[in-house]
Length: 381
Image 1 (cartoon, rainbow, N blue to C red):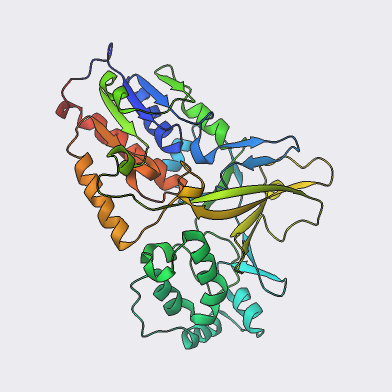
Image 2 (image 1 turned 30 degrees about the vertical axis):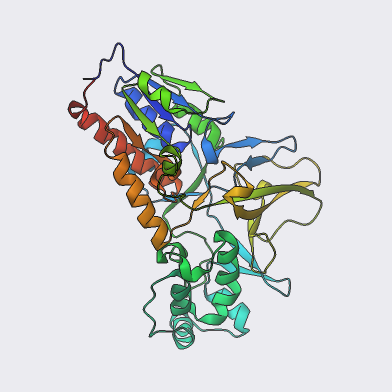
């Protein structure tokens, strides 16, 4: 059994998943060591204030949204105050105009250059142009069945192919279902009742999560398997296929290259603009438009352009697990292999091979921590 005087828990990865897990274990008197190969905490939610007084999300914009009664929100609220922010995105059209995304009544009016009296008129129009007879089995078919081919060709197909590097026909239906289609004028990106940003940024929030006497953090510290021998249990936010030396093949991921450019132009129409064209970029972000950012010094503002790429072009920077029928099956093989080892648990986006928004990530790892504590009597020292 676990010896609270002698034993330690290893958590690999100082992102939102590992730090949530570490905090719960620490509050239950476990001694926790969190390591990370990067030089900073907070994983992909890491943010900082630059020399231009803008709060930059180093790995792309992260937006928090959920139900008000979310257990994950209650947990995070212990470590931050919130600034209300309802995220809005606009898509850049071929003629230079921008229009709301997700698709809503305004978007449809902009594209078809006609107006609709109400939601019912809008829905009736969409019903006439979408493929109602199609029962979607992949992301591309979901596009066609939801909004028809013209809107799909503008807003979804080029973007999705750039984002994922494969034809949307090969992508799991879950990828395409992330964006709603609305028939009213609601221009918010998310429908959730609670939408906000941490007042002083994600990094400070995570720093407070790991501020506990039973937590030690070591950065610039890559994981190796020999470390496991020194710990009672290891929670690994690392690629599960890499851990098993790619024995059955590699799981596919997409990465992103970020280009920060100081521009002296008028503000963007929204904090985030999506590109609908065949350029290599998917979106651009103007950071000082977020309410928890400071205001830019002078007229220059930082605009970050995102260019998705294969993991080979950005080694070690895993962002999006590519969910296909084949990749899901491959992951299930590695998952079964991992469950034969009682002293390790895979966590995080790369350990679970799952794209995780922040609130689901916190929720999942609260559960993992609670289950570990509950099942402790099953583990032998």
